[in-house]
Image 1 (cartoon, rainbow, N blue to C red):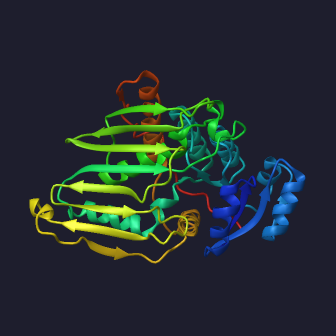
Image 2 (cartoon, rainbow, N blue to C red):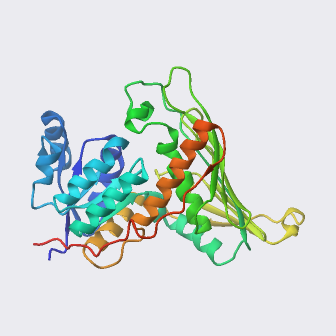
Image 3 (cartoon, rainbow, N blue to C red):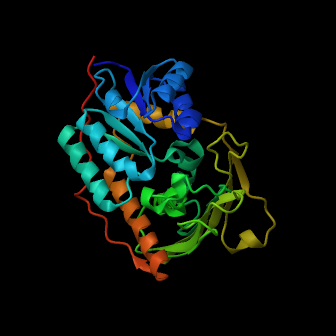
Length: 356
């Protein structure tokens, strides 16, 4: 078995060239073999830039026996189809979020993963950052008492472009699939459980065919809630994630994902006196580590059989169910029940290890 996981990338999308490929090149135990495009010219240009092979079609890359794993950063509506095709070609798959745009598609991916023995991981790179893992640890160990509220806000001003798949509902566009998936994933991760109900209402920028801003709340068991807002219409907020518990709160300023200087965690412990004693919160600072590199390394460890996948397809299925409920609530302007996530439909499989 080769000690190096050999990667191919399906498409020259910006998320590949600006984020994932630099992380992959810096990762231990991984090698970039090739990149594919539907344009022979773009494939050749990308290959020359990154010092790898260029493929004039996605199928050509999948047919290369020297590639062990692929990264799928295609428009949302193509994620499930090409993930399944990659699995059937014997490749492990790291697929950009959202993994799929329906629970039914997640189930198809899970079936293909079981049948082929290849692994799939939904690419939520934030979960690999030390700061996020520290926040989850603090909540899980009771540093805040009982967690009651997770407030999440993400937004970026994205110019109007009717040719951009982000704004085409037929291509899995809209803010819910693009950034609502982060809100759902983060709330579920902090509470270590699943919401039972979602309420959301949407705004739509003039001339756009799909929602560009959504606000709402996810209701969790035991009187817990996760208010959220996501938008293509507003500047990115400084404070993006806040967790409030019965004995304190924590705050994560900035994303900590794209080399911003905001890699801090603020923690305030105490009961009612936290509002009365004037104490400043404790501050933890985390040196920047590329979360895309960490993501690639963690997935490669699973492919080589050195560690289990940190999240399996049951997690992706549950997150997709929340997003479907979010869409249903927005469409009907009412609270939408989240169906109970199946524990059987997306069971992980042991990896088929790369040969060579």
